[in-house]
Length: 374
Image (cartoon, rainbow, N blue to C red; front, side):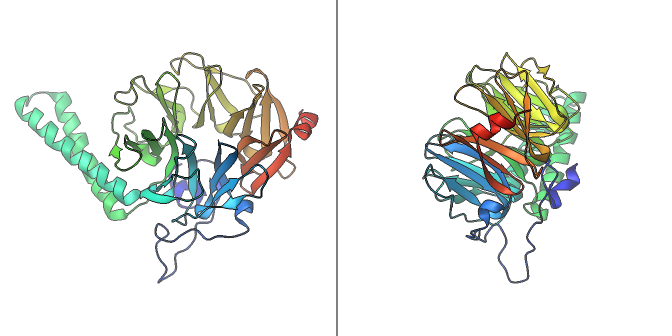
């Protein structure tokens, strides 16, 4: 699974040809995304409603802002690489993440963006943490030379230093896969090989988070904060990580399933859902402590979700699958004619839905959805 990141959209099985950087051209972290009328027809990976608009991100650094009565407008973006997720902490302040560990920030509801961080910076954060951990454990081991647990932790810290140094030398190669902000100041971004970074000042500074129970460094695909302050992270191999104190400490990882989990969603009544590979859907009624599998009429992998004003839950997935449910338990299926992957869905303009995926942006009327549900 970890080999996918060179040529594939992480974890979704959607082929994405990465741009080849020719001699003399600037690095894609330094090259602005190209403004093109075809942006709405290329891969789009995530979207969020921001005020009356929908903000979408995707391939080649594309960010689109869809207004209620306008065509989608492409934003100015300083990087030319795959963006994987977007989240706004309020109506103006948003963050987008993607390949090469990039983190972008907008202060104008997605109309313009600037780079806050990339994989080169994250590599240095990881190295600083690992070296500090070695110094701390060497001092503790000197005071307790017979403590086997300390000796094991020190060996792991030595490995972490070597790994971080190798990452710094290799350059920004680890993608970020999701981002979530509690407000305009505090947020988290998660990604490949167990990577998490955290900010308390709106992204002016970031810290590397190392407290999760993830010794295999499995990919972390989704992060979500709940209304009660609980923080959840889901990822590869069905692992679920939970913090009840805002990320300061983490409980032992839960393995909900063997299938990888791609998305976390909280519904209006407080229920939390995990979506994942091969039709995996699980629900928690207690802020992520306990989980129950929900049976679905298809085995399509699920990547995105939204809840409409009337409570209807929509799940977007593989092969053009859109699942609809009034109660979050029993689902009906709508199938896109071209069967391309759907990666997200959002309500739009009262009468329509916006669908995003491997062939870009599509609009579906709610009347057509209702008529065609199976």
